[in-house]
Amino acid sequence: MPTPPITIIGSLNTDLITRTPRLPHPGETLTATSFSTGCGGKGCNPAVACARLSRSSSSSSSPPSSGDTPSLITTRMLGAVGDDEFGSTLIEGLQRNGVDASDVSVVKGQRTGVAVIVVEEDTGENRILLTPGANFSVTPGSLPETLFLEGKKEEEKKKPALVILQLEIPLETVVHVCKRARANGVPVLLNPAPAPAEGKKGLPVDVFMGLEHLILNETEAGMLSGLDLPPLSPSSPYDKDRLAEICHHFHRLGVMNVILTLGARGVYWSSSGGGSSKLDNGFIPATTVPNVVDTTAAGDTFVGAYAVAVVLLSGEEEEEGDGSVRRAVEWANRAAGKCVMKEGAMEAIPWRGEVGL
Image (cartoon, rainbow, N blue to C red):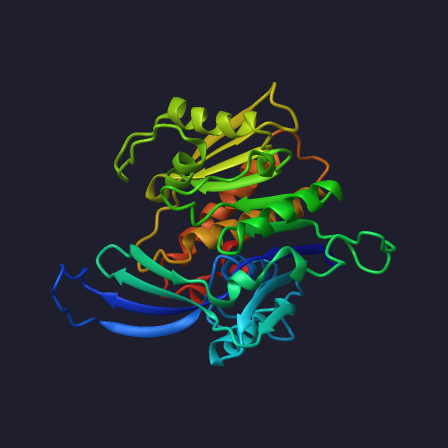
């Protein structure tokens, strides 16, 4: 029987992707290599990652068939799209990948969120411009009353095993969900991306209090912590003390598990194990891949893979201390490595059989 669902509350965007040998200079026009559209978003991509990595497929390029392994975890998506052609395509894309999209609202008079993505072919690095559209309709009042089973009988519907949040929906909704989840004993994974723009306030401190999982990169860590963190290049040396300082800042705010993604260098993780007096931590190098094609969905794939792993491993009694967190990070690292070898966002996310756990 599947475990209680992983519930993702977040954005759904249509990706408009242009691949180019390099970025044009100001005033310059370049002929791009290709253009494509796809389904994406900081909510949609992790939802698909959770669904795909919860079951195997007979082919790395097609959804599972009736003969494939059944899903180990139910994935539920809460969000909003506009009443346009992009919205219906996103809902179909979620359903095709095994995500329960029954709580995705279609907002009349609104356009679906759009992300304009430019990918440099030589490096696979991307730059993204986001128009939120209907995503900003995901307000506290729009969430279903049964989300955390408040006042409901337990047998009617299982509580989420985990709730995943990011920052492409209104901040008030993120704060509201964190508070309700904490009050109802539901663990939360927060990926604070995109980080608040320069000049805007960071996240309220009470978002971090009691937060089970925080996954962020160094840019986001610097903006949210206020620490002086000069950017590092992929060739920069691994500085354990520097990374530990970042994680300790968030532990002091009440976060249990801090996962700091370092791009091509790897991942640093730190776990308080339920208390700040004892910390377990470690560094895991990035998975070596023969060819980096597109990094667009790597971070979202990591989030989804980590979420699936921590939910599945939480039931293993033999896991003690940092074991489940370390294993979850290792598996997520491998999944992200598979993702960057393919073009696109949702299309590049691997199935469970491609990664293994």
